[in-house]
Image 1 (cartoon, rainbow, N blue to C red):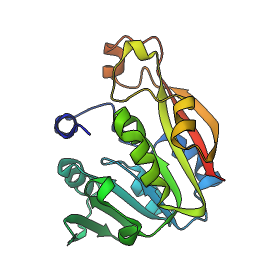
Image 2: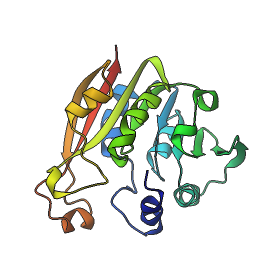
Image 3: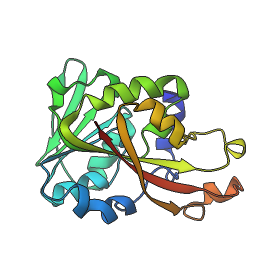
Length: 216
């Protein structure tokens, strides 16, 4: 993980990794995958508004983010004053049914959080370099209930046109990372015009894809 890169990203007033509103895939698939569930995990979540959306819909929403700028900005932007505590070197914040852990995701365990009905990986996997992805995939599975579902959002583009992050992660790679799972592409949506940064890169295309991953 390039901590300096992400620290620079969160120092900018605007960057394409952050959305000021709830992610469109979360809105589209909320009823199917989230409604009626108790707990959702959002790994490497930044200052995502997805946490607020889930919490307002009576879910226990838990995010994990290592960058202190993103964590501080999340609470300020939503005018929340969380309770905070240190847990074995990790910072834990909570306001009502929204939790945020400020730490390296690999240092978090189910002893800290418990397990989850749904994990929504909006841009975590594709933020990681190749050498960390298998470790991340293995660690992520620990946080799911036995019948839980993992939703992973990736980006599809011509790999020769952008080095990442966001990194290119194909369906074949997903199947290698989650070899014991059934993976289904649910949806895709073009985002090439959603932010000036994507337009500057002059990509041939840029799609977001959401996959359902269920473990056998």
